[in-house]
Image (cartoon, rainbow, N blue to C red):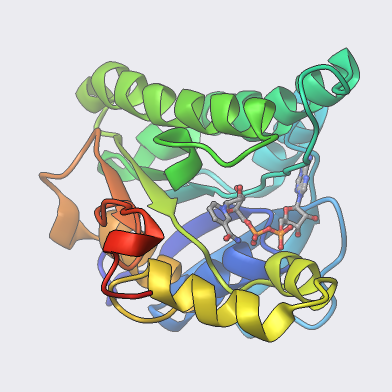
Length: 253
Ligand SMILES: NC(=O)c1ccc[n+]([C@@H]2O[C@H](COP(=O)([O-])OP(=O)(O)OC[C@H]3O[C@@H](n4cnc5c(N)ncnc54)[C@H](O)[C@@H]3O)[C@@H](O)[C@H]2O)c1
């Protein structure tokens, strides 16, 4: 995508959080952005419009594809859900829902928009994976498995869709300051201590912002990345690069 050309982008889960920042960034770069989300985001900036979407539904994905026009330059598969549960407590329905939103969703949206992504010389797909597709936090079997699946899907789509002119990459964010995480931290009795300890985990000294993910997505979606495909770009302030040490050996202690 070139910032100067008139382009169209679809961002799933763009009503809030990372998806909202991605939609704002692509619109600021000159794209007409369709925000596909279960819920109405309310006030959207110029160049943006909401289309009701459930990424788990083939019918819903097809309905969005029918109203976006003949060409889509960029598809950002961002919609995702997460829950905490041990394997013993987790239900089959919870597992299936995580897979349906996080993994089937990106596949289904890409499938539904394939004709538009091929039009006009090809487009770019950016999937939002996670560092939890590389490692895992406790009680996240379904989430981690789905995000590792997103990384695998990204590689497979890059291979299969490259000949059609479609590049496919993933961004794997680390801890990003969204409403979801803020609510979680606000519920902790030791919130300030948790924030200080989180900063220590990150060699850059702080957690990430949705705009940090959005700028990486914008690069991968742009013509500047025309030879980049099949990659998972980690955006985590080097958190997963830093090896852990026991407290007695850690200079941070
Ligand atoms: N926040 C983080 O720290 C973090 C870290 C790594 C990866 N991620 C990933 O980034 C993405 C966005 O995360 P976020 O923190 O902004 O989440 P969020 O919960 O703030 O926003 C998710 C959005 O997706 C929408 N959505 C949920 N299910 C949907 C469905 N079936 N169809 C359409 N839309 C649906 C929601 O309505 C919401 O607007 C997710 O894929 C998440 O797994 C987030």
